[in-house]
Image (cartoon, rainbow, N blue to C red; front, side, top):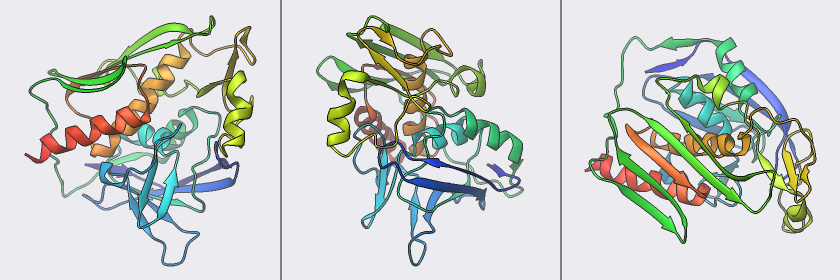
Length: 276
């Protein structure tokens, strides 16, 4: 089990509420896992980054304990789990994490600079290894955990925008660096939906500096960092959501047109089999 060597902090505007927030990540004790602390509230309530705490999943993943919430956790959690950080205390002074540049790149860089250390007394979590396929479906959208000898993620998307269309990406933690292959991929949205989402109280902090925006005429703010950047970003979100298991499962996780809702439903199913 590992934690970071030195604390670090990053600040910025949250995607949905548009509030400026500071996050401080600190070392934690062996076995504590990754958890959030709302330092802006009295008594500093703790919200574990565990699948049991999942709240709503509309356009981001929210964790909640006794009505205390923390939202848009997936980018930081993906960076921590992919960097091998098992235990971390994450202090936050508002309800939503900052979006930064829309990717996980800044988080990964900060973790690398903070340093990674192994705990002397080792707390070992039993691996999560499904023995048969576990499917979560919603119409033609799905996510499935397939038995495999090593962890792999494959993600497919399909949007009626010529600039995106049908894209796929596959990533194996043992073979490719998350920090270079997945973390730089930014969140994306659609110009035609912006007004509707803002009227619904969402994406108040989104702009052309922290999200890719696509219209039926093309990208509003090119260039892209990868030709299939949207597919890579969806894979990034999936890694973050499955980190709520405490570790990434030893399985091939295959997703198509999925969502935070389907990601976290799969995480709950995998948590159930790990408890059997």
